[in-house]
Picture 1: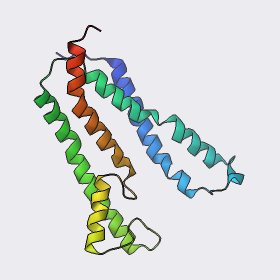
Picture 2: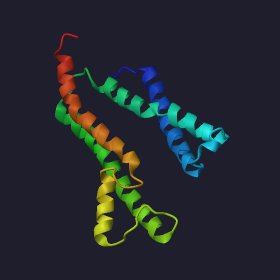
Picture 3: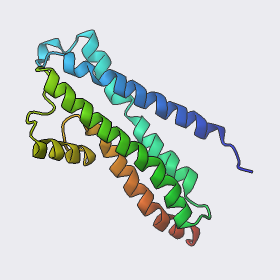
Picture 4: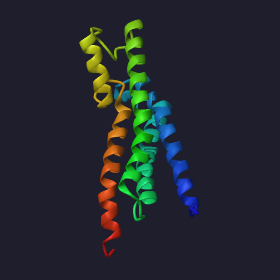
Amino acid sequence: MKKHIFYFDALRALAIISVIVLHATAMLKFSMPSNMTHVFRFDVIVEAICNNSFRIGVDLFLVLSGALSLGREWKIKDFLSKRLVRITKPFIFWAIFTSIMLIIFSYCFTQVHYVTAFDPISLIKYILETFLAKSSGSTPYWFYWMILGTYLIMPIFNKWLLHSDL
């Protein structure tokens, strides 16, 4: 039976709330004036507080992943097959979905400029750059590559932790 650790659940809840608040308030900065004369406006202050205070969510998810995985006996194949499928399927779905939606919005609405060229080569390039988190509108996808690298290096760290004299 697995030992249930309450404070890990509390940290996970804090991480979830932090990421939601960060994403919900991220659009505020796009509606704000860019000059410094408005620095003391309420929406500018709220955005600055949320943008800086709630960035801890991603770090908490990463720390929890390590705390719950490292220092235990597990087979590398089982560890990677379970986690890679769980992160790769949603990543592929959302990257394709987001790319298609941003292409449609950019084509239908002149004020949306995520995609500026609509020839097949440009569209394929945009979709591929979305997967690499390099195209406009795909900034959140950096997390997939970071967590993928973390999962690939974890078996090495785990072996080291299990066989070291720490």
